[in-house]
Length: 123
Ligand code: HEC
Image (cartoon, rainbow, N blue to C red; front, side):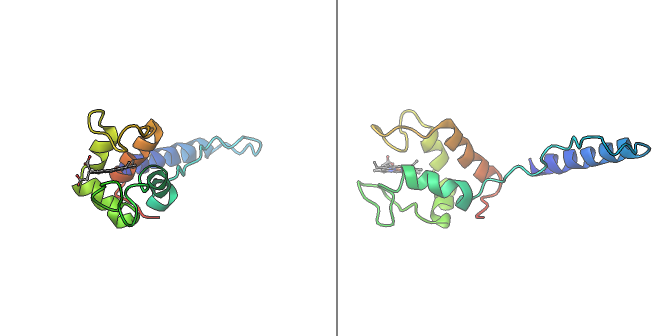
């Protein structure tokens, strides 16, 4: 995904350069879209999702039968890699958080998936 993004940035840059040569009208509006969509990071996005939905059981001392803590970057990353965290948040038969808690919103599920796909950025 990052690679595609870089390619499209390059393409946009080339297009802009070509269009601007020979066009010296200074009143032209700048059509460049914001080139910096924010990357998904643990501290920026994931930590608060986990704190709001998971650490009531998966706290630094796990409670209610939860088998592990989800309070640090490395614990959450490791749970995605080795404990099927993404499978469990998307599961209807065996969901996390367990019922009667509400499941994560689709937006939150997507953020966790994007965080994994982006290589688990911490900051
Ligand atoms: C109400 C308490 C509770 C909440 C809230 C909760 N969990 Fe759990 N979690 C458990 C219990 C109990 C288990 C062990 C039984 C099981 O696997 O279903 C567990 C197991 C898991 C496992 C599997 C661990 C393994 O090694 O098999 C994952 C992954 C997980 N939880 C992630 C989460 C995530 C992510 C959240 C928040 C979105 C969350 N849990 C919220 C109680 C909870």
